[in-house]
Length: 154
Length: 154
Image 1 (cartoon, chains in turn red, yellow):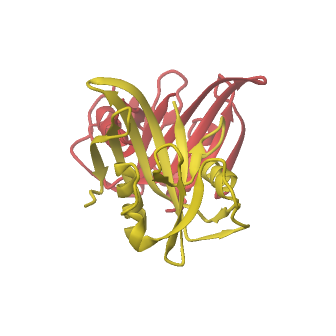
Image 2 (image 1 turned 90 degrees about the horizontal axis):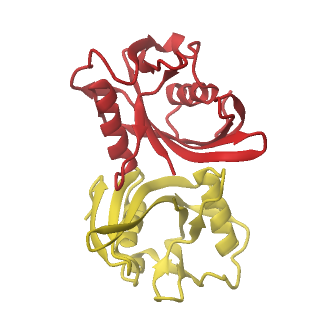
């Protein structure tokens, strides 16, 4: 089962996002957990690999289950661990293999093109400290079919 | 990948444990996540199935990666989500299919026979509110080979 760990770095009223070339969608930097890693080790390593930055005291912000389904058929299930952080050390890389890195004002980030569920995940991380749990159901083309979130978010 | 969600219910200076028949080891009630569940839904359902009790406001206490290895060969990797709760509703079942349910004084629980890693997980849940992350390496016979925990615990 795929498990990904992603970082939401909020600093000076900006959030660091990566613009993926395929769809032009913005995403939280991060990536796949490796064998034997803890989720916190994974987000720290992946975030640094993609951005150059070392997250300071990342806090778990959400634990999410993803279901990809084609009509009624379930094609894949995976999990995503979202961590938020308010500071970092090290320097931003000038280029990332995964896409274009961009500091986006927090007031603008939710208007950017991205997976609909990511908008809810980021909104939660901006607004609240407690952990959110939930499941997102997507089509193979990443159109959000439905979701359940606890606590709920609007 | 197997993912389990377990509940640490602490109430009136006791903790509810289940004594598994196979080894006579005590364990946190819980079990396997089902397709599409969130981790919080899983712990709520599994805890109620095993004990009859409905956890009130379970809080994530730890996220753990488990590696089972035979000499150098890795046989399995799974994840465990430990939730703690301080209250419940509903009634304790008189018999559980999974083992014998027992309210154990918190002062005694760490002296009971159990997987060595579980002792650290429970100790953390008793002593601290923050989330612990880590990886445990076990033999196929559940002898603890090594572990990394963040924050560390003694």
